Length: 172
Image 1 (cartoon, rainbow, N blue to C red):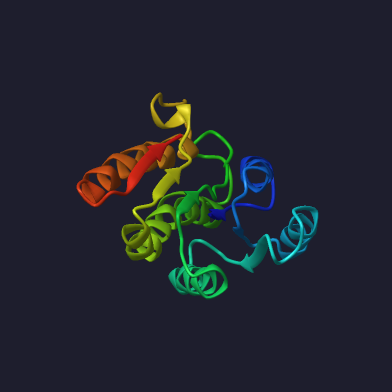
Image 2 (image 1 turned 90 degrees about the vertical axis):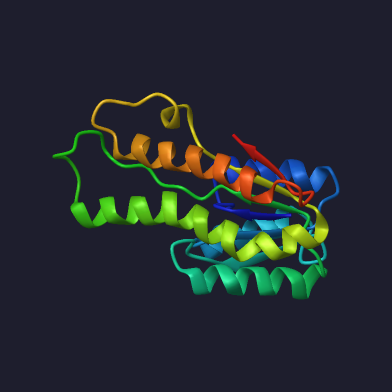
């Protein structure tokens, strides 16, 4: 099981639950120290691997998949979970940070799907995508909400694209 955004929050909690369920894990995030601590907590490199990955960099995503397949020979579950927030109000926050929010929350999910699609088709695996209630109900002045609307649409588009391949898609 590959998890992006695995260093904290939902990603780390999912990693703990997946390890208890017997999954071998590849944990991806930008925060190498937090990933390393989580790998140690989960039983070391026999059970989990840490890979530094900025999901907004497609080459990082390709390396992530290559390292996953080298370590475990297959990829059964992908949890596209990486995401970041942003202050509400379209006149708030730094525009460059806003750009990174869009790249992480939207392009990052696309890049995860794109880089893992072949391996998921081979294993007839499961793609999980983190969206938000904010992706179904607009929040006043929220760029984050807009990105999660895009993720919700991408989840449905991925489900349609994988239709008939044996790959399941779940939007959370």
